[in-house]
Length: 357
Image (cartoon, rainbow, N blue to C red):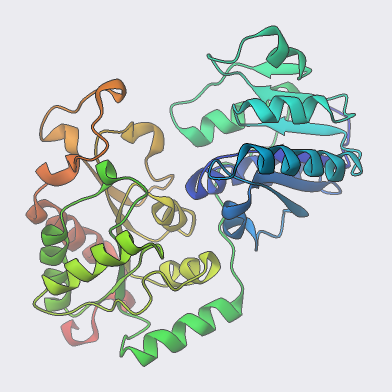
């Protein structure tokens, strides 16, 4: 498409990892429309993961599901007022929530392109957009990018992008030093996820940590700030013969977490936003998946080893999923330890522990 858009709005209302997986869309738009200001509409609590992205002009936050109906309506009305002032000439919608359709309908924008959702085919929904695009691709990144098909773009960026500033790494270096961690030789493990069915056993994580520590790598455990996350990290530490560093768990911003993961020799974790951060930063990954679509949500990277619980025992369908069960429990620690050995061995000599040289 020859038209040069000047003001673009990208919409995605999901979780932190989902937001990171929209960055190829943002990067592709910026590449093809270098003079355009690209804004993103997202949930308020997910704004930090895109806060340092240089390709984003402004972030507009919508209150999430935990907010009362009245607050939501007030927030949507206020947001519509703010967005209308920006006079967008292109809107790209990647989300299926009903309030978004109403919001987009209120914007005086001619070109409104949305990903097509199988459960959103009513006349009201389709009339809110100038064009709906059938999703294509085996991975969420590919599906997001397929939304741009009507623009006829020749240059597509497929890499995800996670940004942070030098001061974020400086802060992390200081905290690593305070905890006697060599900033050249450490492994990051994020054992927590939003839901129990995505988690692995604390005792198995402890086995992996003991193996890494015995090979000369310091292990830094990270997590969210919730009480459940901190309890998980604490239990893992209690089961370790050689104690990992837990001082950063629940106490880093997303840019700081990115700096920590970027300089790690290896990232180990479950299906979560930090896993996608590691993929964006090209840090080697060992990841574990349970009763989810592991191919659709796998790390968007070439340097990872993935374990899917379905290779060890049958997994339930989404409709029969027990969200309080740890489906990953069938994955043995020995397999994960072997994967860490392979990825660390494949790393360059400068990433190997000094006492092994």
